[in-house]
Image 1 (cartoon, rainbow, N blue to C red):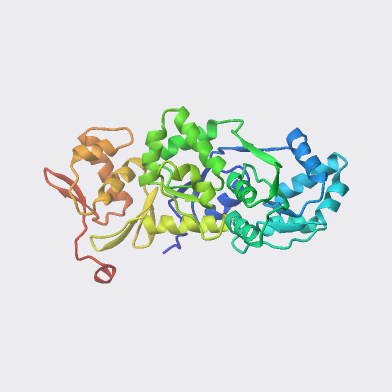
Image 2 (tube, rainbow, N blue to C red):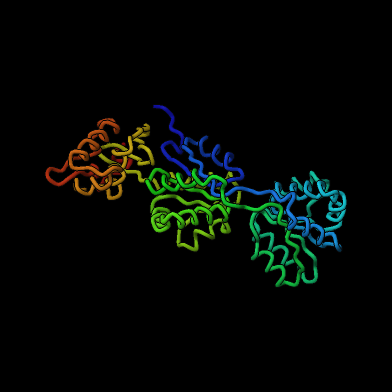
Length: 375
């Protein structure tokens, strides 16, 4: 028997811009198929007057604390300052502050610049970083907060309410993708039922996806699918915000990292995929096929749609009329019979699908079936 990779048969849609390929590679390595539909793109602000103005404000007087939230953002800021002839002045200014970093990549960028961080939370979360700051006391302190693609209003406001002066450093920002076509096609695939999981690495990507669905009249259908069939994973609670506001449930890793997000997607997909015991066989239904006694069986879209319909209520007889509505292109009774025949062939003729005369079809699931009784 050939070894089957953990995510064989699943398809994952990726909306990220930054680190999309890294996330995709982690999932492909486990056997998943990946479809990319960037929901955002990163615009660097090296020539942006907003970044220049924030930097000049920073240099007006001493700063007590600098918060670096991302490695790419901190490096971009220093590179922009060097381009303006302010690099040494900015680094000298920062060397006299307490430097806090959100995670190892930000800490690495700080060290590369010849500086050293004083604190970095083990969880790599903004929430823990904010908690550390407010507990240590920030009243009357001047704090520079390097943003990471989007405003951090809750973070900055909490510091201001605690008495700090906050200078927000907008190193880069998210905007809509230059070509919305890939995202539009990814949304189609989600609604057609060919995407099994949709991970999000940032709140802007989630918000942009929702905005695209709203503009094209597909938001209601998207909420329905994401709430009931697709695994929606977010790198953290901030990324989940735009989805949570619509009532869409999400899963999140304990640590806000790309690797942890990929593991959460993989674990959840395997957990939620129905495993049935039918006609003496162990059957696990996946996105594009099924495992039958541990062997992978690729199944074409039409028969796969019928298998999913039968697996939703294992053992129940489903009428041909109901199954006809499940076919991707619709169809009459003969189309259902053809698809059922193909399904049986794909499953290896295992007797998993039974015909109930004049009523329809059912999976050959018996209430007392268990792995032990089958083995």
